[in-house]
Length: 476
Ligand SMILES: Cc1cc2nc3c(=O)[nH]c(=O)nc-3n(C[C@H](O)[C@H](O)[C@H](O)COP(=O)(O)OP(=O)(O)OC[C@H]3O[C@@H](n4cnc5c(N)ncnc54)[C@H](O)[C@@H]3O)c2cc1C
Image (cartoon, rainbow, N blue to C red):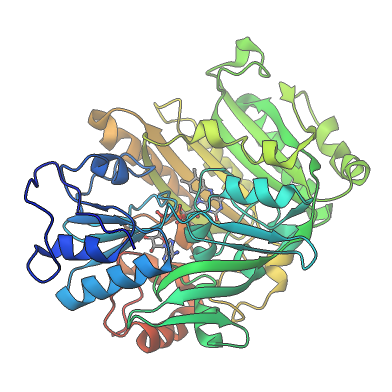
């Protein structure tokens, strides 16, 4: 095995042996990936998360190359009582992938993936992003539900549930999980599935990163595309009331193959929107039909015929292209603040409340999305996996987005104001992957009715709460 010294530009001492060296050099002797210390080249890049509001300085970041690095790093941290964080895609808005003065197990370089087109499964390492997954699976005309931005880590997404265009047809991402390899807090390497460690397997599907480091995921795949009928239809904000009332009734009659999202924002300066509407408030209905194009055209006909849209780009296109549609709206390095509710429905009151505040933001980058849940998500029993909120009709996510730190307060305030106004229409639950640093009550709301059972599994697999940089389930 090649060994390297822990990289730090400040460290000019000669290479040392594990017996005599400083602790981090000992770790570097045992892992193949870089152990990045503050001031090392690459340290700042490695501690940059998608959300620029997060500015944490870990004591060291270990860029793991495989399971052996994960095992060695975990052992090292536990022997010295060094607090840990686990990072995969780095997209979590709360910034739990890093911790100040702790040790970060960075899995982002672990990008192995293999599709089995005969068995219709895919096995992948935790550094895989949605876009990587789609690229490999679509080569075989296969897919599994993943998120709506290609740059989100599939790892964190799956552990929290995994919602996306295909969920009404194929279930949540975690519903398609067949097995996972896990390094547990005591350093064991085990496989969790319906047959092996079923309690852990249950908890991994919605319980977040509380139970160990997942080093491999195996999913079932479904035939899809590679061309799908998908895109966006856009209306001026002045028509938003009628559009949302029409939408509410329209979606009641559509098959589960149709995934839809409502988006309220200021129109971006893109060629497919007429220039007169750029920077103006708009409402968009986004859609993706997971099935035959001609059948999809029939289903989407009433939507495409409704009102006087500004633009309509719901058309046949590669699924992988549709999966990148949202990327430009949520680039890394901006300041983000999110607040989210599950909604029971879209009553007239809920629509009016939403529309009264959605465009009050002074940032043209801020937006609000309302994704339709249900379908295959709701067919799974709420206690069958750790993901509890199977009865939610919609997921509302209010996204404050801006660039200047001096403006933090005003954009956080807009987000909170809309969130508070929408509280009467909430089911009381929240999607764990959309949660910020919001306190224990909100963490409990995220795990809902499954919280107590999650505590039991946590006690079994992580009684010392080694994995606590997450929406934490405290073992008690
Ligand atoms: C632009 C954008 C779009 C999004 N769209 C969607 C969407 O469409 N659907 C959806 O469901 N979610 C979506 N999300 C939310 C997303 O699911 C969460 O942010 C998720 O945590 C991202 O996973 P990650 O691996 O990138 O996160 P990271 O920040 O790297 O990790 C978050 C946490 O997950 C845990 N974790 C990650 N990997 C592992 C592992 N292998 N083992 C153990 N613990 C682990 C750790 O506790 C870690 O702190 C989106 C987020 C963004 C920023």
